[in-house]
Length: 252
Ligand code: NDP
Picture 1 (cartoon, rainbow, N blue to C red):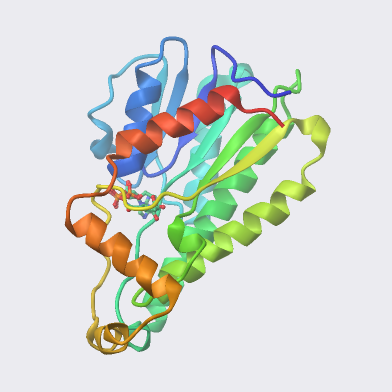
Picture 2: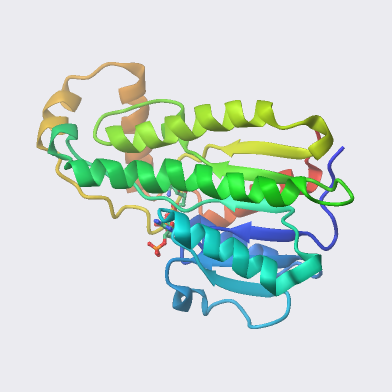
């Protein structure tokens, strides 16, 4: 069974704010754990100390070359010590608004970051985990969402991206040979108080449809949105702590 090593190396995407930052700060506070903290803009990682246990890298998950460069830089930095024990595939954003208002570019960008970004980073990390000489393997956390489980109006492409993450993760997990000792964990947070609410918002049609809605998923949407508006979302540190517990006790 998999056990988190005392000197585990964590690789986290989207560390500039929110959930990614909370996890990076938690890992950085654990003696012995190594952190590869990544962000599109590395200056956003100045909250992390500069020491041997922390490597800060530029990484835009929407760019294949950026992902490849980040993995190469990590391999070069750690050399024969390079391993990834925990990947947190966190980077993502929400395209919100009327579905018909989304441009081709906006809908492609949403899937490029949230889905293809998640898939390409996970595949690269899996290759590193699979090569571990002692079969120490690893765990891959793909941050989906409640929006990857139930759909409500006004964010159709965001739902598409998170449903894609769910299906892809389940299939990919079944491809992994048990001897590789690699687990995949899909994380489905509800409302989390972060910088998340920055998607484009063109909601005219959604509001018309939404008022008369009685579908359970729409009720759920109302509940989540009211909860967030009332300040009822959980802090990102709560997600970080839950994820750390799962990583520590991870067992097949
Ligand atoms: P934030 O907006 O606070 O953080 C999002 C992070 O993703 C930022 O670091 C952002 O970086 C990064 N990011 C966005 N696009 C890219 C990209 N192309 N390459 C690399 N990094 C990128 O929001 P959250 O912390 O809330 O979101 C984190 C994850 O949690 C997302 O996947 C989101 O879908 C999911 N989630 C959030 C919920 C919530 O209620 N907040 C609920 C359920 C799931 P930059 O600073 O460069 O923009």
